[in-house]
Length: 197
Image 1 (cartoon, rainbow, N blue to C red):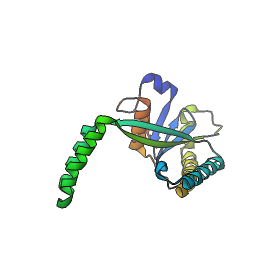
Image 2: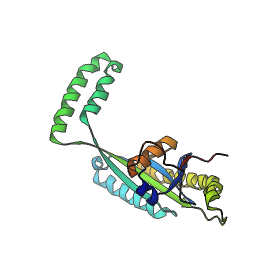
Image 3: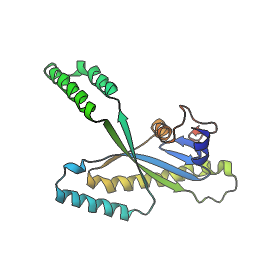
Image 4: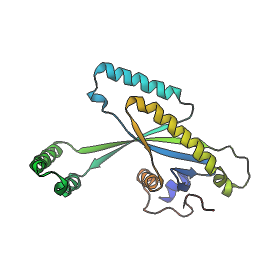
């Protein structure tokens, strides 16, 4: 991570589906796969909005929602499709060529965009110990339990809406932080993969 960003977002450890920030702040990140709201009937859309509002109002802990928009490169996407051609049933292969042509024509008019939705669940410990370098280490297990319960609450609250969630684990979490904070390919000095005994 860039030095300036590391000062703003001080990650001390990443592991087991969460990361430690500063001395006693922990976060876990969930990726959510949304439903296609625009294809729903108006009555269904209204029902979903009310359910979602009820879910948010029922939370007793903070939650941050991050939406990332990535522009996809059509050549990479088409290359990935073509690499799977051998796996396809023979009678479907001519359709692939038509689909590739359709994608190229569509991209010439507008960009391919992928939106990814993330829910960031924070927790701050209330430990009274005075050794700041060991404080997060001592709170690690408690943070895991609290954040796991919060993940389950979010999962249960979004399931009736048709939204699935997945907790980012170790390397996934690092890639997420890397993409959001614009850092390097390796952990910054002083950051570890979970706590070592």
